[in-house]
Image 1 (cartoon, one colour):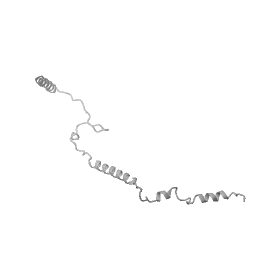
Image 2 (cartoon, helix red, strand yellow):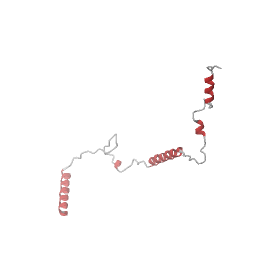
Image 3 (cartoon, rainbow, N blue to C red):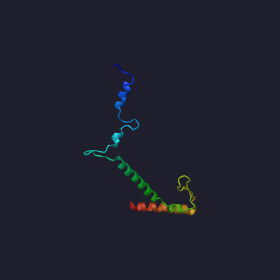
Image 4 (cartoon, rainbow, N blue to C red):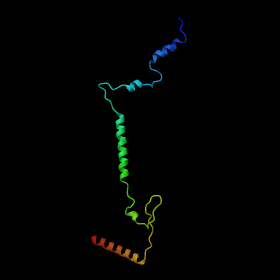
Length: 116
């Protein structure tokens, strides 16, 4: 008998008993672990991490700072539009302020000399 063109096709059909519609390696994923093997559930670890992250986010949301802090009580201070921080401005000193500042410096020098 002479080999025909249909012989190799029939041979291929016998090599793959699995239907072509099922995904590859489906039979390996569907198997239950046998006795003596250790089954590690990777999904449990991922699930725990997700729940930890969610609980941390919830706890952070609970600890938001209130808008009425002591630094924001000054309504006359100028604040940055972007960061909300106070903008420091130079204060013009009067003659009395300059005299008081000089007295503080003299007192500080006096106390430092007493210590040495």
